Image (cartoon, rainbow, N blue to C red; front, side, top):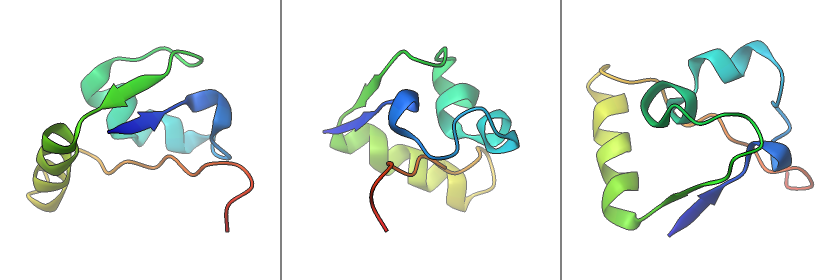
Length: 64
């Protein structure tokens, strides 16, 4: 399971938000965490690799 919380993302409120799979596929509003299970995460990677969806751009604050 992957927890994607826009409030924890270093890219929050940047142009990267407009081209992130969270806003593209999930339609999530900023500040609303999204929980993605392993199968969904794999599917997002497949869609990204095929050029059908943007990549996950989430980068947690405090990690290198």
